[in-house]
Image (cartoon, rainbow, N blue to C red; front, side, top):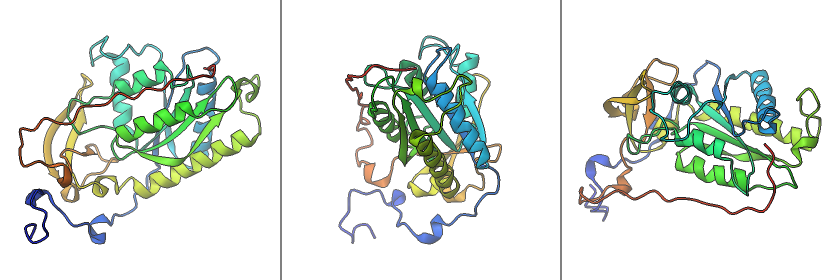
Length: 287
């Protein structure tokens, strides 16, 4: 059939025609599981306060939430993957169906604390990423005027991690003015935007969590988190042949093989290398 289409470079066993019936999925009834990360270790961290405000909203919207605290997390590759904080982070990633990343803007970019958490997510399985198919909402705080450098950079990172990054986002300027002494966010247009972002995240998660493994033409790798923090590959199967979901004991991760358009006749051709993304900044940061 592929010869008749004039596409001889496609691998026949990898090519599929998208069909509506293959994308149909029953809606799960359990609360959406949302993991929240923030990128500061300061005692009065505005990115943490904003994260807690988002958690309260998500809880009110019926989500099950976890906040990961990066205190004690070693620098990437400065410890073994069996480090307790690394194991905690990786297991939380596998547990989640959606995520919220909140970072201060430091030197025009996300903070090192924020980036270090993402860099601990294993890429040892090649194209398989524990974040693939999960929804993602982005927020940032700034010490000066409103900026979008950190959320824009995290958006690039979310795409690289193959996450479904929602269109809406939040940037809170002069964050030190937006929280009271008790750490609660004051009423403002910034707060209204946070409400909108969390609502959109919950809706996207509800709509996509059972479909994420079927949208990308890929195989599913069945994996289990190990005590060592390393994800173990057990076998491959077609996405639509698996009867498991993220609510099961076994966790399905999409992307175990490359899409058909990326398959090469020469199987010895080296994979594309990763590209580093950097940004220069101009505004002071607020943690």
